[in-house]
Length: 380
Image 1: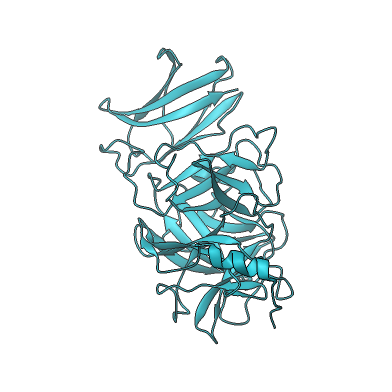
Image 2: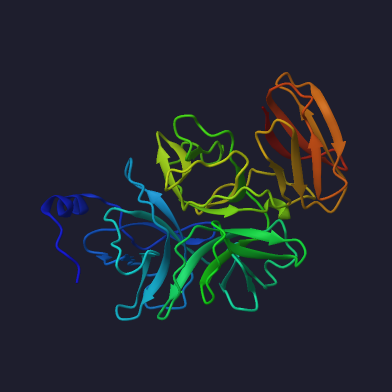
């Protein structure tokens, strides 16, 4: 039975306005923000109240922790489960029923219905080896440029806990995406994950590569994305991607990721305050409806261009999914062209160690001379 909370906590819970509710319609479906209140907290979980999820044990939702109060960043891994007694979905702590869901913990919740494919993946003895489990689905097979967003689904009963940070990776030999435990621990057989698949990057779904960690806050990555800068109304979802464009970068991150907004700037952070290394790559999803300004419309509609690591001192890798000839041009801050090269393969590595330290612009052009994409490159 849940213990009584003191009066101060109860008053705070009544004053705060973030609770789960009917979602807003966004680019990928309905989304909302939930905050654990005294009325929703039970043991290690917090009940969701939403018409998109209530009374539907088969519903699929994606979640990301969202720090709604300055300094509130509880360090615990979490997933979702269905309470069949109350016919409600809940967000729970992976530490088990002996744990207590912290009051005021915040979460972004997405119930995807459009502009992507949703599926459930269950780890079995046939698809799981060591710390990894491979997904076998037409939405992901042979698609190294797909973006995956995952959430552990404990299910209705008899679920399996996985109290670890997880990410996604691409196996080029099997040509399949998979889910893995960041700390290399064995992946638990029976663990089930909700997966949202976006086939190609756009303004609402893209890969973000971290720069050099801040000296004062190495666990935080402030994002500089024009489409979301200064917009406090958006809702973000984050999944660590070990293989952007299908190329593994070996940048592991053993912490659960959360998002927050500070002084109008969006950021994501390691909830255990461990450092996020430079060149680590994350799939970012913006639930809201945003104009697609990431790539100019052309015969390369829905194409993807990824540049990583960024910043870098030596070489950059350019990954794309064009099926036609393209070239890349690098210009300096004065607009002077300093390098040009052909993109003859879908993944090209370019040595920029000879360039001076600074910020450069990388522009990709199609065979007709049209500019298809522009990327900012930071040379350390």
